[in-house]
Length: 431
Ligand code: C2E
Ligand code: CA
Ligand code: CA
Image 1 (cartoon, rainbow, N blue to C red):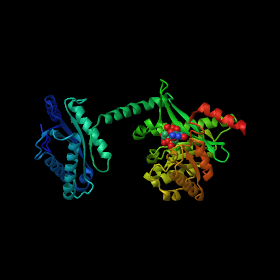
Image 2: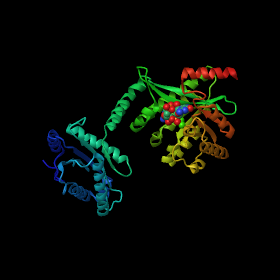
Image 3: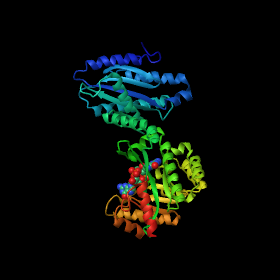
Image 4: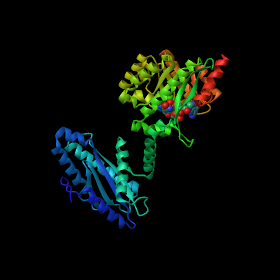
């Protein structure tokens, strides 16, 4: 049973053949290479299916002709191909990967010329097995190669990646986490913690940042850095952010009703909101529902959001300003900071990233950068805040250079709502 377009085995037949090869693997190694063609759709859309089909046939010729170690090959679907090869014992796995990479690159040159598409690229994942491999089931080893291919596809160049078991562990964790989120929201497992912000001049409490914590039913915590990247990919961060925002609004509204002290709370905004922009409506509705002053809520957008999609970020900042809230640029200095962006963006607060304070004793170079950024912010009439303050020395230096707000373990770690309430109540009695 052959694939009518390419003449290769059908995928089910391929799996059967691979199964047999694995049974008699002995001391050999088998490489399963899974390749797809980046920007193939463009060829189909631009030149039509006939040209697309011709390209696929050419590709099959390229991978099968003179391939003396080939055991079997198939088209999985569309432009996805899988080939199994015996690996020459003189090659290590890394060398084998380099050979495939070089072959891909040579083919790219030829195909880009023939099909007039300079972006065409072959993306390959390779899983190499021997008799001791963790899994020797044909379907699993192909899916491992496919997983490596997906990792490869994220790369700009060197689009060829060897499968590693750790990739599987990452995926398992991702599935585990994303599948738990709806229940975790329903069960109120997400808790809002608050980290105080202090005014440099007086060292008085002037605000706080809301930071989410996930407390599992068994009492254990999952920290944001562990689950946020996964739920950003799945889009579920939107629900978690909204949940956090609602908790904060509710908290402030209750404190106001009780006639107690409140301070502005800043909320983190995931990059995922940018593609949807429902956030503005959601925030407006929250203000309607809870009737708290606009000045009590601020939003933190990371520097990378501004850099990735400046236009959308500007639209969002503009929308938040129209609602009446302040906006800060979070993590300034953590990536490819653009000073020029600072002058173009109508932000109210700049949060210097904690990387500048990574050493207990301040480095001269970090001092220079901090004082320059603070100075520049001042001239641009932007409030400066430094996060990650852990020592008295750091705090004193920030005072010396005129950084207006400070946040960090030196003053307080992020604390649960009830503890933060006590923190605020104590401060109220002081003043
Ligand atoms: P971030 O917004 O930059 O938050 C600051 C992080 O630094 C927090 O980590 C905080 O606990 C930690 N931190 C505060 N002071 C110090 C210090 O003095 N030293 C050190 N070493 N660290 C300090 P956390 O809470 O684990 O949050 C990590 C990141 O997860 C946050 O970085 C933010 O990007 C994201 N995140 C947290 N909560 C939310 C949320 O509700 N929504 C969204 N979209 N993202 C959130
Ligand atoms: Ca933040
Ligand atoms: Ca930050």
